[in-house]
Length: 387
Image (cartoon, rainbow, N blue to C red; front, top):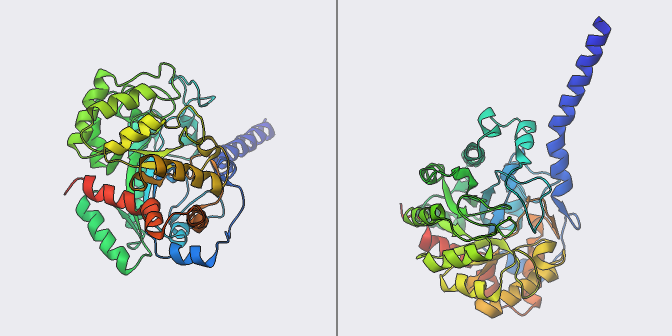
């Protein structure tokens, strides 16, 4: 009997070990690149790239149990690689729920993949059953990374924070500004007062939906794909009162229409493709591109196949060119979706290849500076809370 108990204990321990090892295996497998670093670029591209302030509107690194301050040989980004890639600002999104059988066409909100991931990554017990707590925990991870970075990673909450960061960056660009965003507002858990909880935790960008419809409105990938709910209209008003930017990535077409009809401040799309170069459920129509531009917002072009119909620099550049021609260079930005279970052409150290692609596409150095980060810098300096 004793031998049997010992054997069972060994099997349990082995099973637990496999469970705890699974997130790292998923991270390595799902956050992949077409080719490994180093990434060559021409001398003119490298020279221009070395002068740029680069801003990326979407990275899901907080979902994974990696230390942002350490360099890894897998995944798409971490602070050391961001610094090498010349990133000046990174929006970090918090992913709190995804449906089983996730697809781009139709998903129910009834199931959740991330409960097991939270358990396997040994997140606090309260995150196992609360989407709000998952968002707050990921915010805490970013706060801890910032506190331990010796000034190299700065969590930005206000315009004055960002203005001071830019001044410091101009003296020493070996630093990255971080903005917190929520990928979908299901962490509100149907309670308007939870907007305050997210704001107090440092969130300054609010994606309304992710891969399923929620209490705020319809997802491009949901079942009903509807517009703003009555609760959603209250949320939009509260977000604008708090000077939190609204992100329409993953929003259904009726939801985009409804938000553009009521928004009084700029709205953005953090990571997307455009129908003009790649048809897709969540890729933006010309009408919606024009509406976002009219609000004063920006559109972050993604790097993955469903967004741009290929895994290549050329496909990303084609989508950027189309968007710039349609609504103006001043409304185009980068939205990588790094670490969001995508297959990308490069990791963050390969961004000079994108600079080279934009040069080859005929963009001027000043236009490239705007697309690669200047437009996001301008938007945040105008739209973040003042103090």
